[in-house]
Image (cartoon, rainbow, N blue to C red):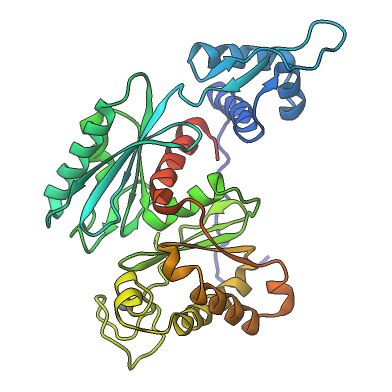
Length: 369
Ligand SMILES: [Zn+2]
């Protein structure tokens, strides 16, 4: 059979599943169930995961010994016979160090529990720090936050501006003058903990997906601050893109005759969709909403998104802008594409990146997402 000179792409290698991988996978199944459904008996866990009762008991024993799960007593209703003991994830069993490096003028660190609650917050002013100095500042902040935690620390999660590859290397973050900076490696060496670094909009959409109270598996989060970035979850998985730059819609040109943008082009979406412009220029918020809708409509149609979530100041976004955005998308896509579409605000407020940074760690260390 000829393939016309085109070589078929190689099949994905299927690695041999090692006993340790299997155990880790089974452990994740149990944690995932308890994470999303709440406390359960060992028999419930066996039914829900398809694992045998012996396997479940063994894994639950290990997780209790690790301090991640606790015995929570029996359910209230009294049935005949010995009621089953419930086990559940202990939110304070371990904590996560979360960093949000996205504000222009500061870095924010926080202690986050296993259920995504921000327990304490620390800030340091950036004062123009960039390059190596900014890496040191982030590491100092992470260390300071870690120092406030009594008990086990699951890891460090970081939401940073810029394009970040799959190894947590910041390929390009203009404001911090980072190009090819191995932030993950630097933090790991300094703190000797598991470290996960991702783009701020990507961490924000993970926060929304995991802790935003949504059932949507296909959503886009648009984060509006001094600039704009988007994070996409499709089919329940984060979309990162061929060059790790998925969601960079801020520099799509909407008006070639528009204002000059920091990226060098003119009339990028970001020149009208940013907080200082929305607040100070006297622009019509509805007209910006229409501009955003024009950019998002093809994305909504192509991916058949269920939700478009806005994160940023509610006084600017959650009114005329959101209504015009919603209406413009609906005008421009097939009725089927927008039938179940919801355009809404994120309930996570300013914490969205910190919570998302914690999700990176939960996902990487416990397999919970
Ligand atoms: Zn631009």
